Image (cartoon, rainbow, N blue to C red; front, side, top):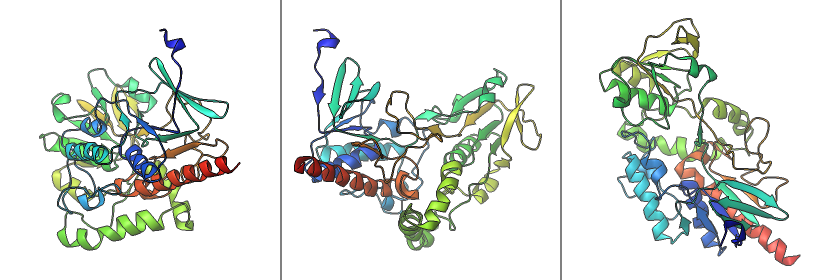
Length: 369
C-alpha cells in the first residue's frame, strides 16, 4: 500500500512533545477522560534531558521538580541530575499509562477545514485539538557573525555541548550569561581552563540556594509565590516583567556571580562582532580563545508548523496557552506562557490543567450545539 493511500488516523487530541509539558498535559487530559495521543520524536521518554551536558543538574531543588500527581523521588533540597530527571519522566508516563508514541517525528502540521492534520513519516493523523507541548528550547540560535570566526576556533551551541573535552586545549568563551551559560562556564573552568562568560547581567535570586536555611525558608517564597503567583499575566507587575524575562532570561538560580568570581571565571561585556577571526566584545576587547560555546538561546517556531499562530516577534499568539482565531490550537511549555514558572517543572502543570479544561469545555459546547 502506498503512503498516499494510508488513511489518516483520527484522534480527539494530539499532543506534540513528550517532555514535562506534554506529559503534564496528558495527565490532566486523562483525569478529564479525554482521549489523546502524545508524539515525541526521540526513541525514549526523557531523552531530551539525557542529551544535555554531562554535569547538568536541575537549577531547582527536588521539592520543586515533581509534576502533578507524583513528587520527585529524591531528598527535597537536593539537586537532581539530568539523568534522574529523564528517568523520572519515563516513570511518570508509565505510572499514569500515558499513550506516548516515541520515535514519531512530526514533519508537518496544518489545518484542513475544522481539523488539524499532522504528518509524521508516511503517516498522517488528524484531530480537532492539537497541543504544541514544547519548551522554547527547540532550534539553537547563534548570531550571524559566528560564521566569521576563524575555523580553528571550535564552536558549539549549548544544545550540542556535553563536556569540556569537546573543545581543544586553551581558553574558552561562553556567550550568554543566563543559567545555562554560567553552568557551562563553571564546567569548563573546573577543567583547568581560562574561561570568559559574556553577556548582560540577568540578575540573581536574592539568596544562595545552596544554603540549607535559605533554601527551606526563601525558596518557596521565590518559586511558589513570586515566580508562580505574582509574576503572571494577570498582574500588572507580571505583565510589565514579561518582556524582560523573554529577552533576558530567568535570574540566576544556583550559580551566582560570586561563585563565578571565586572559581576564576571572568565576566565580560556582550560579544558583539568578530575582528580578525576572533570574538570581540562591546568594549572593543578581542579575545584569543580556542573554543566558543553559544548559550544564546533557542527559537520555538518549528518549520513544520504551517498554522499562523506566531506573532511578528516570534512568540506564540496565545492567552494562557489558548490561541485566539485558531479553535482547537494550544501551547504548553514556552517561556512565560502565563507566568515565570510556565517553563519550570513545578509550574507547567498549572498551564497544562488550564488547557485541558479549555478542551473539555470546548468539547461540551460542540456536543451541545
